[in-house]
Length: 140
Image (cartoon, rainbow, N blue to C red; front, side, top):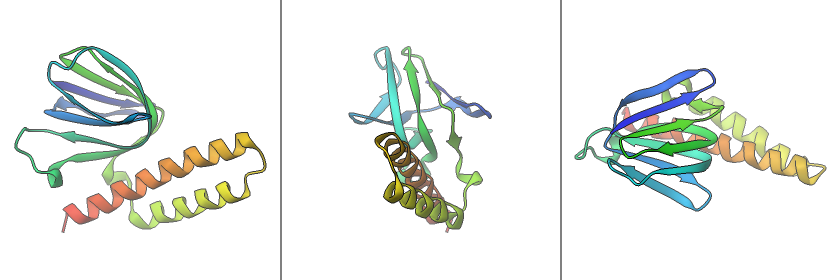
């Protein structure tokens, strides 16, 4: 199936994929060729792409996403988000620092709105750190 991953900064992925794993509020969903039509909101986390059926998990291409929308029409999967971070755009050190800043924002939130925004940022920062660590582990 064709998979397109698009953010406000441009297309991050546009190629054939065997499987796409998308984090949603109900858990991670796996999308394969001929998946039933679907439109769903995603939550901050790690979106993973398996290019070929036999590829091991170490070959997955991982992206940190800050939520977004997935649209499946059976032949093509489209994922649109404000913020998508590819592995080559991350360093573990920067991701760790961002996670610490997000944790501080959660602790110091002065209202429910500020807390919800801080928690959203925390989930996204955690996803970035996870992608950075996966990149490091798989490139050894």
